[in-house]
Length: 181
Image (cartoon, rainbow, N blue to C red):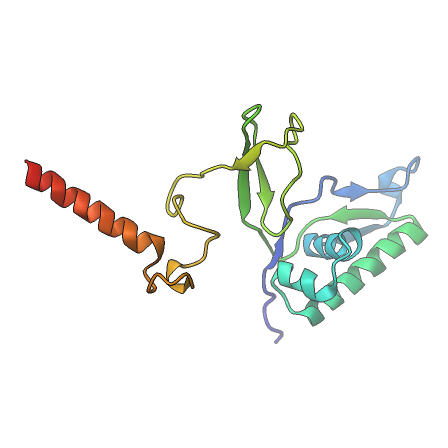
């Protein structure tokens, strides 16, 4: 019995999920199914021109698995083009990548970008370059830095980091309130 497939991480779903030759009714054509993870592998390898190792890291799979996925995807796309088949993109064991939220200071537009895709150059609504990461609220929204644990900082703070000082500051403020009352 084969092992179960691991979920493959994808940045986003394709904008179009069906491709067919123009001028031919779809019901008269053979149909090929390209899974969403195969689509993502093509996007990373051919559209973004990443090396297989970098693309495999983004999808959280091994380089060998990525190579097999992209090879199968290329064969399906080539067959659809050569034989004039309908190409449908659907299915697969996938999970969506986490999203970063940005807010434009110029127009107030808020949008999401998947992690690992780099920072945009401008606001998609008004093309302003004055935008920043929006606080998302919830647990960890006041995090310091880039999501790294404060205990692993190497800034000579004795392992306490910024959060350790804040806790001390909050505790002393609470003690001051009790003392003043």
